[in-house]
Image (cartoon, rainbow, N blue to C red; front, side):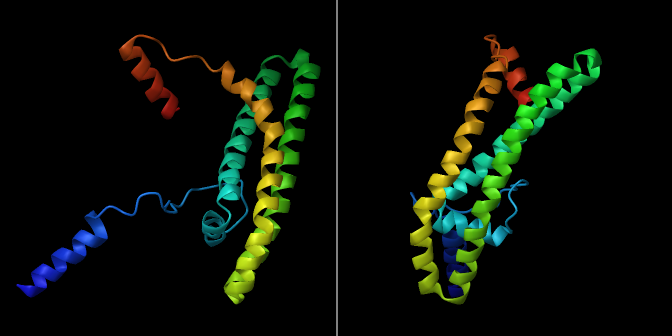
Length: 178
């Protein structure tokens, strides 16, 4: 009887009991455009939360830019006589993408250094985190601002969901699963 009671308590506390509210829990997210191992992403989540949010935004912005480049390439293939127009627009988007990738690759190095220092000497690692936290977050936000200003116009180009209830639901489902 005691074993059943203890196991019930353990199952309740480990599975069913709600976690402390307000404390975010790291969940593994595939960030295909961020060149950091998963443990360093988790370290960023725990010690550089604003930078981690910027990594997620960076990944989303690069995906949006890649879709725009593919769309421009499709138009270029459809209308080859207008190659000059599509090439100019493609060049703008590629420049934004390359600048963003370059800026964020510069941000990855201090995260790696802080992670390794934290693993070797936790106290010095925490000092390094405190030194770099604000600087890295501001640099990431400044890098994202230009790209977000450009991709904002792409988001406004997407059609609105229909007002009809059923058509609206179908539209949202189709949008989630392209």
